[in-house]
Image (cartoon, rainbow, N blue to C red):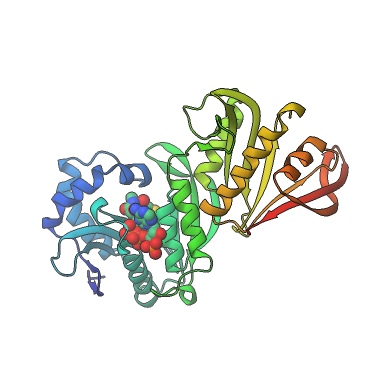
Length: 352
Ligand SMILES: CC(C)(COP(=O)(O)OP(=O)(O)OC[C@H]1O[C@@H](n2cnc3c(N)ncnc32)[C@H](O)[C@@H]1OP(=O)(O)O)[C@@H](O)C(=O)NCCC(=O)NCCS
């Protein structure tokens, strides 16, 4: 297949040229590119010298490799490639130079590359993969219409290290145009932006009370390392955020967290772990209240629920003090160990 170009208003996809190589060398040194791409880190003279030829070879083999350029200046903004995996199925990969990010370049380039793959390459199913935690790449994929299928555990081999990998797919009828955002995109974007930032400490209503994220590696606390690495993993996946409580710099042996419902990201479940001390009830409820405000404001949640053992009287007292409402019992909802099951109590707070 001969190399070809695609021109739209904001980007130009064109074959690679020698003049792109200096900028490409800079892009390959960018920390986000190193963090998220599978590339070999070595980008020496040898790789550079053969790069343009390799992109031509890829085209010849039916695998388009475009430079993404500014349509006004023709300067390099990034790159995108489509690789046939098996007949009818191809995978897309893209990157954008740090200074050009956040202006819709990857989204437009990916949309046009997908259209090309469907219309010119006979692709029936286009796949997208990204290292878990690459929320911006995921947002690009979602805006183009990909459905995220899930996580391939340690599914990527990144320079010899196995990493969890998000995988998604797109069929021709699902391709989204510029003004056609996926449902709930505002919430998806808000949550992605939260889980992209370094986890932050939150201060609660009582003076000296803080919620410190378990996913923060500097928060050593007293929580066993296995729970801390689980919390870190859940944070990277964007599925949960966990905190331990500190009062005037001293750790309180209670952790609380929010687990976002993976089928409906407007809902989260709150969980409290640890021995709750009767004398400190006001501290726990203040921390819960703060977490709920945070969930509504920062994660744009509509509902936070607790589903637990009706005999857990201290947790129930804490939640009631934090203005949760009792909704009722769910039969056989709790696993009580062995083959025993029991009813679960449901409490919730909804966005005012
Ligand atoms: C992922 C990447 C290609 C995105 O490129 P981009 O041109 O910035 O992407 P877009 O501008 O099209 O962004 C799509 C969405 O992501 C979000 N987003 C992207 N960059 C953002 C930023 N810096 N801050 C906040 N949100 C951002 C926005 O929600 C945006 O949609 P919106 O503008 O409608 O809100 C780029 O960050 C990159 O090159 N990263 C390193 C390499 C990489 O990860 N490649 C993907 C491998 S699978």
